[in-house]
Image (cartoon, rainbow, N blue to C red; front, top):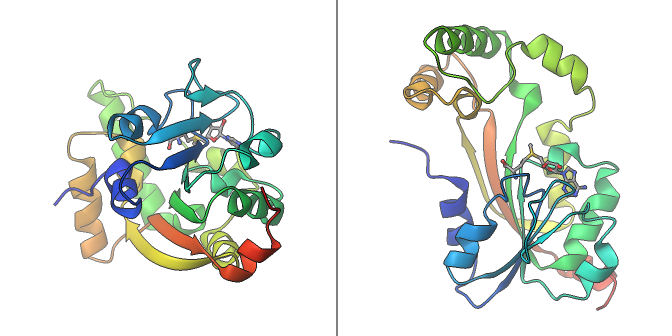
Amino acid sequence: MAVADFCTFVLKQLPPPPQRVLEVGCGREGGLVERLAAAGYDVLGVDPHAPEGERFLQSTFQEASNSLLLEGFDAVVAGRVLHHVRPLDEGLDTLASFAPLLVVDEFAPDRIDRAAQDWYEGQYRMLRASGVEPNGPSDLDEWRERHPDLHPHDVLLAALRARYDERVLEWLPYLSRWLGGPSSESLEQTLIDAALVPLIGYRWAGVRTSATRSSAPSR
Ligand SMILES: C[S@@+](CC[C@H](N)C(=O)[O-])C[C@H]1O[C@@H](n2cnc3c(N)ncnc32)[C@H](O)[C@@H]1O
């Protein structure tokens, strides 16, 4: 069975609208902003590369934190951005000051082992040869050299759990999202089921602890 997309996961975690939602790291395509708005949420996407438009702010969340803090968000959504955030503790303190609920889509770069890398790079070459252009990198050794400072999953999860009570942690296939071929996800799932490659993607949701709330700046 295909993995539900991140928007479906987010909608399961959010209370019903009306709710004010901040998506950090929404990317050039605008992430989930338009889909959440269509579902009735009042959404703002913040990213230095966010598209133009009234639902977007071109900034890092840290640089915009004073104005974001005043907006009174009910939830923060963060898709594939937290593994980049440095310093991590300060960044998560800032996110926790924005809203009581955090919903995350992430991956564990540290879980990509030799078998997963060989499978991924082989699939990448096959897709290219058949005219499909994958979204991810072609060479994972070269990609690691370009991204030496991504947070391993245990570091990120520990930092999240220090501020939020974990509500959900789901592990799922990830390399197929980079590949994007018609059978990539089912092939990756078959290898995971046979314990030949690890689970690399995860989704997480947590509710801010009362200790975190009381140490957050008041708005
Ligand atoms: C891998 S992309 C993910 C885009 C989209 N959320 C997705 O899942 O397809 C990471 C995005 O996070 C943004 N980003 C990185 N650090 C950020 C920060 N401190 N504040 C806001 N956005 C940030 C980058 O500009 C980039 O667009």
